[in-house]
Length: 161
Image (cartoon, rainbow, N blue to C red; front, side):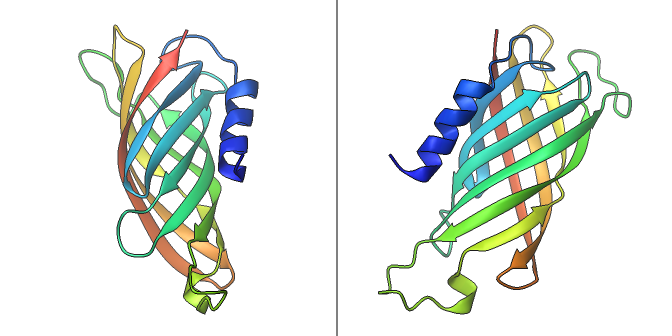
């Protein structure tokens, strides 16, 4: 079994939460750059941990694992139905490139480790256990060199009862 699948299985096993989309554990998809599987576990009334296992479909072929600690502001934007919190946080990512070049990877194709600062909006439906989200994430890669990057995505998650 590959490392990403083991990490995903571990998260599924140890993130046993219950409830609606503003509490509990959610699983879904994230579309953008990169695209993949999204996970979110609420830790309190306004804090959560999220993560993703994602692949790039544009440009260079890479796989990314990221995780973030998020704080949600439910009072900033009021809506008639459901909830629309603004969220922000801090996290990290590891970005693995697919180097099928016989071990002659260029410096910009080496594994990267960086700090993420996610900023987003999540719509939590009133009568269902779904949420949809839109986020922009500035990233400061620290290894193998300091470099700025940006991820952006939309997604949907189902929260288990």
